[in-house]
Length: 362
Image (cartoon, rainbow, N blue to C red; front, side, top):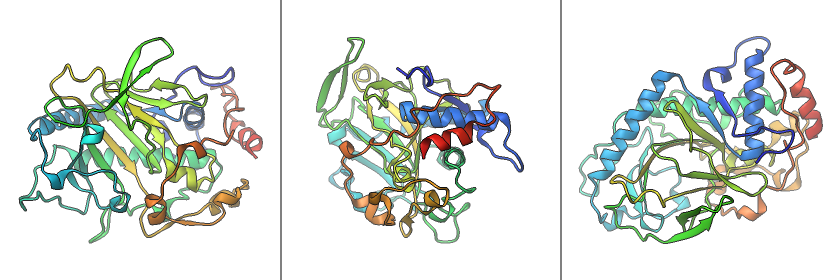
């Protein structure tokens, strides 16, 4: 699946190895950044590994999510039926359903208290504040690692990210979405496509199966395999088929593509549903999306300052709110050969890799 000089499979990095320290970068940090960036380039995704204790938190969060959706009604009321309204991108909170995608979602957004249509306070799945903090910290670590890879200054995206912690009366732009695909007791539209994989296996996906997150970084942990991402060669492959309990999938979104002048391509992904109806819960996922603040702009000034070429379409800063409400045809993306010519360094020769890769990129 990979090129001759690339990673033989999806890159795996320990989140603890992506924590920067003062002074010169350690060999483990440089090697982890290299693995992460190369995996993003070849597969548009990577696997991050949390400490064992954090795996228990993720497992309990998924168990709570399954129970939460199982007790929901089979036919949600009309005011809980939402389609993808881009105007509400930073205001979603609480439960909603999209029958066209056969998907239910509970959005946890710090600063907003979800209210049921009956004006009763909704009881959410358990552990969401802790999971939000865990995945949010991981997403910021991945973002900083990509900044290091691109030779940008430290924390170059601070101005467009939420405060940590949020200040009084602030509402989070980032969101933790607890999702359930294809719950058998939920009566969605159930429109499907059948697709034959390279190995001849027949797979089932939704009609609206190609999705691109508008996030900077997305982190996904599911209770069952089924997330497929398109690699650099245009082939779809399963990214969560062999994850351990403390592992999650991470991938870049459209906002990072814009902020890096197209140097980091966003992941095009879809969810497999043909192996789900046989169980009683469907497929539950925890999806954290690190989002830019709505009143800021996506600018490529940091890329120019680092010496990267910025094409005309990225020259003018784009207000985040406009960017989120704009459609982004996927056939106009994935048009850069950014990382593909880079050779993957071994632990012994990881020293000068960053300068060599940046020279090749310019």
